[in-house]
Length: 235
Ligand code: C5P
Image: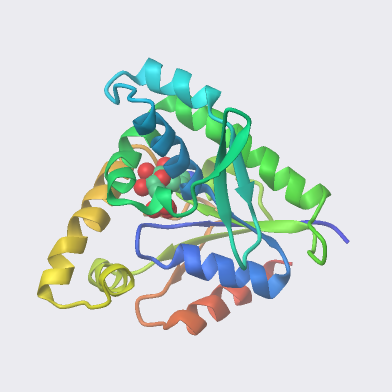
């Protein structure tokens, strides 16, 4: 059997993380959350007190940060190593402070070059040495997987949804409700972060050969089914 690489990109709130996880679980593949890697190095940069406006200092620090990425779709994890001991960051990378600063770190070209190489290595490892009971291959999701990290992936999907729908999903996910107040509170983390990210990565339009799955009118299971259908078509 040959390995299967599925690349999924999309904006915040498109459901790409949960949908990619379910797709990976369904196919028996590993799951790679590249956003968690950008978040983890952002956590480390903040922790070290590096001046975020000093791109060279940010990139230099990121190069020293060890990342340990767990790719089980059932329980993806990210950790770093401090003084020889693993420090789990799976929850720490979801804090508002990391979320508010990750776009700035991800905008540094040398940081991106660094993480893209690590992501390619993780993809290769999932293909060559799948975990126990796992099929060779991976569903990798982010902002530039279909275009930069794995442009030659077997399957490339851009997951989109109308902004109002993405906002409501994120509000429900983060705050448990999508009332006016929750929508307003969520707007900055979704719309503003996408605006910042759009200066760095092209995740709103599908590159050549990338299949768009619009989840605006689909529920979660329907979106997973649509992605699996694209995989079935391509393999
Ligand atoms: O997907 P998630 O919201 O966790 O991503 C966090 C941030 O990491 C994004 O807002 C973006 O700045 C950055 N990112 C990126 N390229 C990727 C994945 C994430 O620049 N492939």
